Length: 310
Image 1 (cartoon, one colour):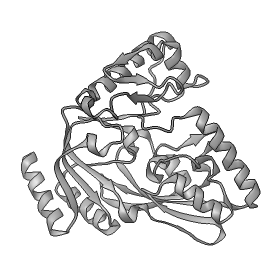
Image 2 (tube, rainbow, N blue to C red):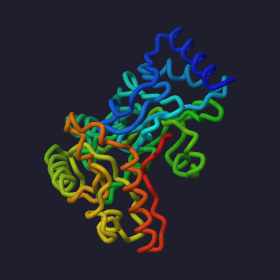
Image 3 (cartoon, rainbow, N blue to C red):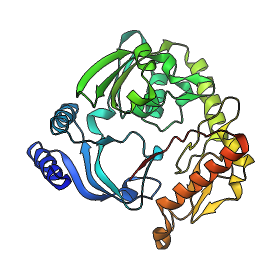
């Protein structure tokens, strides 16, 4: 089948199952960073059952798809994305606290909200993500680490779907940690189970206040894309960007954040008359130019955390 025939088949399935979707959907309207071309088929799934049925349909038709985890880690080229993008909302944002500190959280639950809800219940373990606006699926996928803390330390198991088989599996933390980087490209995280510990409110509040203070010193609060590069051994990514002159670099309206130089700021995104200047190509050029300078200076090829869709 041609790509157009595939789209027609998918649209019929979506209509038959009352699943929300948009054709030729502008990513710059969906992304808080305000760049990116149009997506051929953008699907919003709000029920877990509907998503599993959609994945099974796509698998049987041999049609590929991309499930977006966090928009600040995804960049769509100015020419657009010739494919299917799926956003998990509705039921995927749900979570549930059980007995003995067990937290079941679906893929699109926000870490900051979970940290707040855990505090209400005098549960410790999520204080270090008190100001992290990332989704569970993205954080687990990236094995989030911050302030010397790892989210994976409190994960008990993860429920995933394998795009190669459309099979749903619940795996332990150790099984998940053993998945290769190549195999990770084929999995979609549906939910995770966390084990938290009871603690007194004052101790939890003190840790939350401390992490909030520190995070305000190491990461921007405004809309941005990043962190772009991964740390390399004992060298922090922001140090690499600074050392190679990143703070003096500029492409169009795109610059490295002066205070947090592993994040990119779009200077035109709040200026309505200049929205045509917001180009994904400028972001790509800024990242690639900086990457080359880091490679030359440090003799390493830094890993980039941003997924580029074309």
